[in-house]
Amino acid sequence: MPLIQMTTRDNEQMKFDCAADQNLLDAAAAANIFLPSQCRQGSCGVCLATVTSGDYELGEHDSKLLDSGVGSILMCRTKPLSDLKIALPYDRARILTHAPKWRMAEIVALETVAQDTMRLKLQLPSDAEGGSVAEFEPGQFMELEIPGTEEHRAYSIANTPNWDGVFEFFIRLRTGGRFSTYLRSEGKIGDQIAMRGPFGALGMDENSLRPAWFVAGGTGLAPILSMLRRMAELQNMREVRLFFGVTYENELFAMDALERLKSDLLQFSTEFCVWRPSINWRGITGTPVKALSEALAATGAQPDLYVCGPGPLIDATFEVAKAAGIPREQVFSERF
Image 1 (cartoon, rainbow, N blue to C red):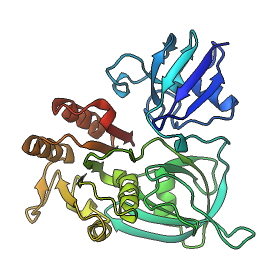
Image 2 (image 1 turned 45 degrees about the vertical axis):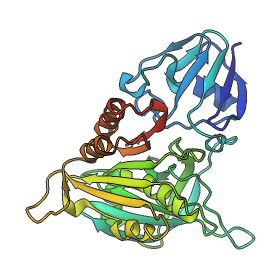
Image 3 (image 1 turned 120 degrees about the horizontal axis):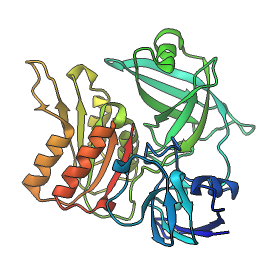
């Protein structure tokens, strides 16, 4: 049976056996190694990794998700043909050693913060010692179950880990969406929602000293806000820039929260971009990727890039980064 050896970004190693007819994600889970993943169908890119040694078979997938370098794989679609050595693009902290369980949480805040965007805050109940903990890494997401159903949706966490058991989300309301309908028409303070996690590989490279530039589209701001808040808590001194884009200006949100961050992130600047602005808009017209491209050309900078939002935004950011000569390993992404 092929032996799979994985090395994380922070140089931790893990091993498991994988039968020839198993994909790598399933085999890892059978060994109580739960790797970041989401769709498990080769269409989201969360389980991206690189094979550094060995032969494998890569099943059907979205080719845009893979790096151009040799060995780029999606672990949910990969079966081994020999022993494999794999480099993971995230730290050991992203890997769970037990399957996430569903937990009940209470809605403690539910408010409209922009056109078709709601802020949802959930709180876990106190444990036997009278406390609770919200344990996750900034950039990760949770799965929330739609009340009264067995369906669930994934939403990124916008706050930072805390001892109060609080999770904050910014959720885009979709016409006809089941969870959107619940939030818009039925949800109220005190309701109970089951949630599970955390999941996801997106997160800061804590060892990097390079400037950190963030690109967010719509509610893709949520995980980026979590990372920015963590940087503020640690009083990180890196240069930080945010390019936040929406279609119409009434879709902008969390502006006050972003402004407050400037008191702790002394090198933090923001660029707000509106694709279809009104005549009264005084900010940047266009997409955040366009603003990013212009900033890279003007400064010649080679920052780490963190991008979250719709697929086209992610793809365009990769193209801009490539044109600017930024190495692929300096671009971290999560597509909605």
